[in-house]
Image: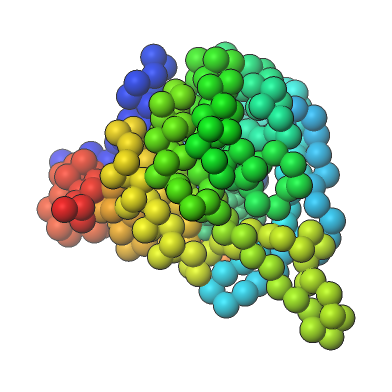
Length: 309
Ligand SMILES: Cc1cc2nc3c(=O)[nH]c(=O)nc-3n(C[C@H](O)[C@H](O)[C@H](O)COP(=O)(O)O)c2cc1C
């Protein structure tokens, strides 16, 4: 009999958010999922998280917006997206026919913006949950500004919780001195799960031009460079909250993912790795399956938090 990799990410929510396995794609690195449907069987994934979605369509930040660093990637895409109305009309109908659940990453400039997007998505066929992005470092208003302090993070969560019956995942920023405090505050405010981490603040300078190498100057750092930071934060947050924790940050292999799971994550997200290897998320899943078989592990639950004291 094959092992049980299923995981329930919203045990406290009436609808629930049951995944067949713990491997998800990270927001902003997998489009709307539709783009990858030709590349591999995306239905095998645990869940897909789409690009950050706002009330109105947005063009994002000025170019250049991507810059490669040692073991990492700087991005300042901003919230380039088609807007929630177009998403409901053009993307959700396809998702409704999929086996893999799609979670919509939501963002806004104000608390009311977040609530409006969440409300629009409530009851839409094909949408299985929302991930609240209070952690984007490269936008001037909104985003990470809400995620730095427990009170403002809780305020956004309360508003989203009141606006939708969908499972609510709150995505945390590492750019704070108290990520466990922010996690505890959003859980108290009604988050069904937390995901972490979003990108770390970073930049690069073009020394010949004597100017920033990226249009928006302050960017988000992702990829292997941030994995140890993300892992430590997942370990810390998993000890501070009782809801499921979703680990993200530099995961490129099954071994990376298993580290997060053993640190206490119930599921993982694969982000930047997809740019180098479009089927990275599936490779991670297959690697986890092989590891479990080789180690005689019958259920994922046996290893969630296994490295905790
Ligand atoms: C190009 C790019 C775009 C991103 N867009 C979003 C976004 O719209 N919303 C969000 O919450 N996170 C966004 N992220 C952050 C990722 O989802 C993820 O949290 C982060 O990159 C760390 O994981 P990784 O090292 O596996 O990429 C983006 C990351 C990248 C590289």
